[in-house]
Image 1: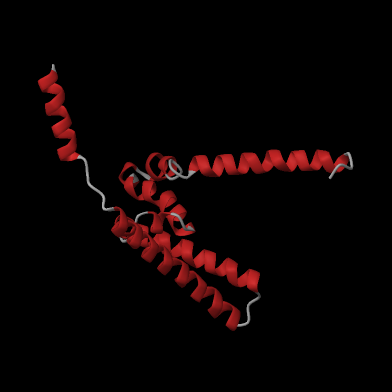
Image 2 (image 1 turned 60 degrees about the vertical axis):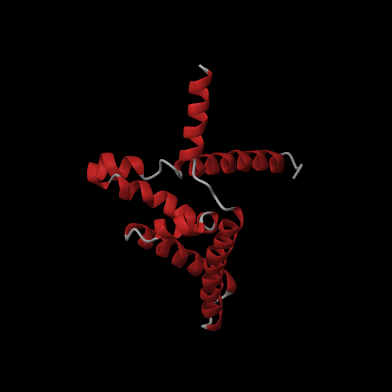
Length: 150
């Protein structure tokens, strides 16, 4: 039994990927910084073009989401994620990628059972609980305002 345990530990050590912490942190910082810089560049261009700040921010968000969706569909964004890790997954582009990636993966199963059923497998719980919690908080705020507490 002891021999099997040692052999198993050796096997696990052999197949477990080794991550170099500092290079991974640098790549995440680099990729996240590039994404945020592109977002700021878009916002600045829109503001300099005469848009109000809120409108410029909305257009920037749409551009970042659309870019992520297109790059995911072209199988480019997964490569960016593999290189940049959390730097590519944390911004809004990562959320868009998490919605589109399952749809791309399961498109061979058809429009309904492939794309339609799988598109929200990762992002679905986030959307569901976000909407549910905002609805509950809205009801609580409504009740508190009705009683003059808020």
